[in-house]
Length: 394
Image 1 (cartoon, one colour):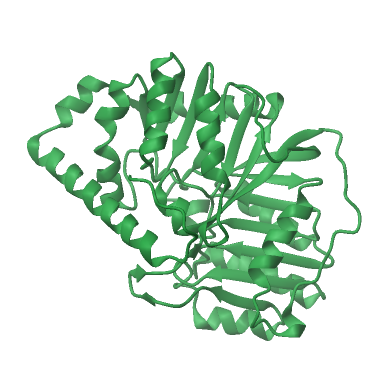
Image 2 (cartoon, one colour):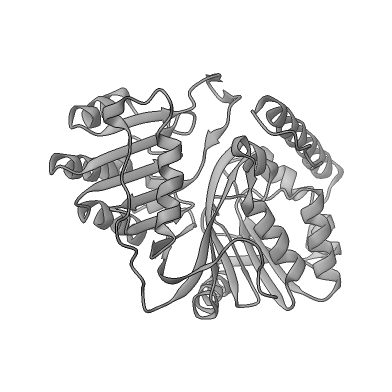
């Protein structure tokens, strides 16, 4: 992979990889408990269960010791966050708001969604990933956690991340006393010296940076690429780039979930199996639990981790945040982690096996699901505030 161009990988960072399960939630709790001045917490889902209450209680402890806590929760994804918990946190002084509650009814939404998962402590420590805050991401004695990843980032890019979080929080109607005015007075440089950038997707702000990062990575990949994708439905341009990479001999491994929490989306993805396999791209299905990860590595050099799914819902209907990391040491380590999961917990789907699955009823179900998802994404695109850029076909 050639050196990525464009805006701006910064050096001087420390990055720590986190995987779903107890270590991730322990790291979040540690970051909250270590805050002295302010916390920004923006996420899609916080359930009213043991894990959700754990993060809530940590935020309450922070507020009680005088930390300014800004908690932005998506109105659709956070619909299970109870009024009781909202009152509990607001009574302790936490600044809480639901993001974009307009036009939401049960099971349906027509507005831009806050899908990223970001926790910032004092402008020095940021945790960015794909995990929501619920028991299914931490696991229980009888249920293995959903597979996902995050990173702890420290260093100069925290300034950019804080600016993004403040812009989302500081809406025009925000009361003066609730506005976030925090700044980072001193930029810390770390000896690990990892180069990275934060990338966004926010169609309302005409930002599709993560999509462009994926396109560039696929286009310039020379040897190998691993993609873990929870809701995989790449658009026409992305499919063309994957096809071209496969034909020029790039070893591409796409890891999907054997079973999904979104059956229609899974059937729509199944519809693309024939295309993927016929273009020399390997498919693996993760077996132990639901795969919720949205990550990629390229040539042992570049990796991306965050909330972005390779589909047009993430392109045009959601606010997303990823960390793009340009570092051989980190990416080679991450690649080994992913390959270990493929070897231990995944089953390869060969073209022959796919054809054996393909009864006419099976294929009809996949085709109908694909057409329905494509229609809904186009409808979502039309109903979401946007620039004048035209959509691509799925």
